[in-house]
Length: 122
Image (cartoon, rainbow, N blue to C red; front, side):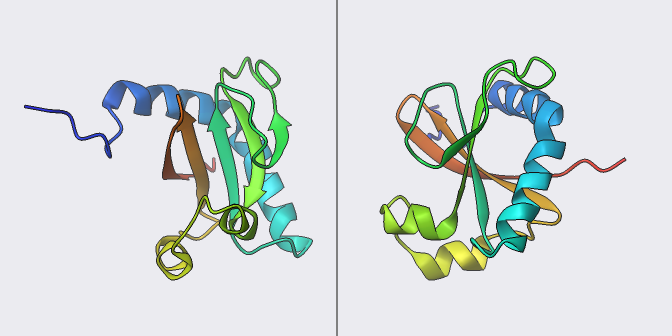
């Protein structure tokens, strides 16, 4: 049986979730600011282990609660303009409420996948 490359394995999901739980409050605040200041209705955060010129560095390694990933702030219009999102209608149709879900563009070794992770409110 071959592994579906479109799926994220459970070990990686655990790593993503663990790191996300360290920084989600900062991502939630940044998401609200992107919307409030009129940049976009579709905030997106790039979660990566590597440097990227997509978006602006928001959280570096070990910056918040010893996080293990870098987070870059961006939004739909920027990614669409740079041809990282091609199908505008499909993306917007599938985008989840940014007050409930964080839109992460998970970038691992030149591969990327969108993941919507619910914010954890206590």
